[in-house]
Length: 610
Ligand SMILES: [Zn+2]
Ligand SMILES: [Zn+2]
Image 1 (cartoon, helix red, strand yellow):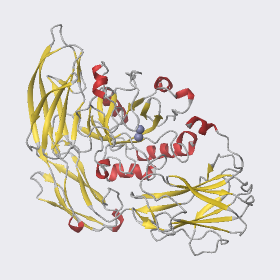
Image 2 (cartoon, helix red, strand yellow; image 1 turned 180 degrees about the vertical axis):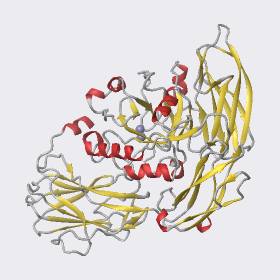
Image 3 (cartoon, helix red, strand yellow; image 1 turned 90 degrees about the horizontal axis):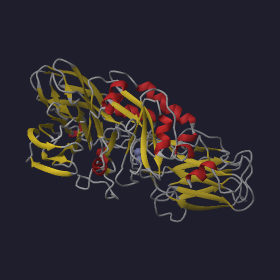
Image 4 (cartoon, helix red, strand yellow; image 1 turned 90 degrees about the vertical axis):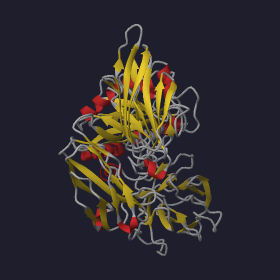
């Protein structure tokens, strides 16, 4: 069906005309006037959209469509019930114009031309939210949320969108939470960044708040201003430079405007041990099925979520209009990737989501500034084998995701390419694909299709989590749902080359949102390693160190398909373990799963025995 849609040839009259937001009281014959004001996230409003027929007119049997964003809470436009949300009044510029209005689908209203054909310059006005309930806006803040207008000019059932359809800014709601984010590792004497952000109830930034954020009881040896002033221009967020002189674990407590309080994630100040970069390598914007602009996505990742590494991975064929057939949108993503990329400070990656409804979804990341959108709907790239072939020789990786369940599970009968797929995403907003005994297991789970089942078949994967955010909140997806996802990337340097090297070496671990510090090693071999065992097997000490964000519930040890040990932790925040592991044979693997009392969890990449 998707391929058929993509192959349809529009008639010249399809997508004709122009549309704009207008003043409800204005004369329908008047020229477009001042832009209407913004609406607040989750609030109701009345939105008046004017449409003028294009030079080729609209034939009888043709139609005009109003498509509000089908995601994140916009009311569906409807003409049936004035006492229900989304009620839409239709007015026409000429009395003898006949239109039959009906709701076709979620957020989609059609006005079918039933009488004479419509002539160039004739106008239609749709007042969306004309009833007592108005029309409810997106629950997440975003710029330019679109009222998409599409036109079937000849009546053959094929419609085209007006690419300059009008939109409205959706503003953040009132301040409801304070976030204080530290890096997870700092070296003694090194300058690092503390990020504070006041957000609305669902995690949107840009709240209108002013006041101070005050840090209580700074630990000795920490150089950090005791307070930061959030001015009108701040949008509620700020970063401060800090230096810690003494080794140890730092957790900050802060008080913000309006009685908001926050506890930071833990920071380990240590001269040794790997540095942890936090990445969210999978998420969406309004260029496919998410909210917000590409620019705001990168800005949020850097200034609010305090990430080190970020990728925007919009769907190949699932936007209005589809990314794969809209080079200007792909160019916009590339532009923002280049603009925000500052090696050593903030690593951005170019990417998109290869959205196959046959083999499952994989996002594709490029570690340079080039890269194409190979669409899963294109017969040339419809299988993962074709995709990997197309990527040959490129600095690129692919990541199977939500692989054990909804919205579609991965077809693991095609083995993952060892070059392009050293790592898999085991947790996101959709839940965990690790195993059936995982915390927060994915919906519509397919038994036998979990990542652990794939490891049991001999595939070697490292683990990451990703937000797969659609709400414009990369790095903090868990704020609006039960699960998020982050990639902990063990890399001293913040460059694309070093991040790629860490991913290829599986020097990564996954969390479902919280910035838990997790270190594991089998003897001298860190997580992700391949360890050679002699004929009779190998016995070695497993080292596990956890610095949790919230009190710990348990630490599980998974060996070759089974949880072989589950250690009750009883509310501690920091745990170090040494455990003897006996007789590991070639083909076995070992990893650690850490679960907090609040459901937060982290998964080390496995150590493999050969
Ligand atoms: Zn997906
Ligand atoms: Zn996705």
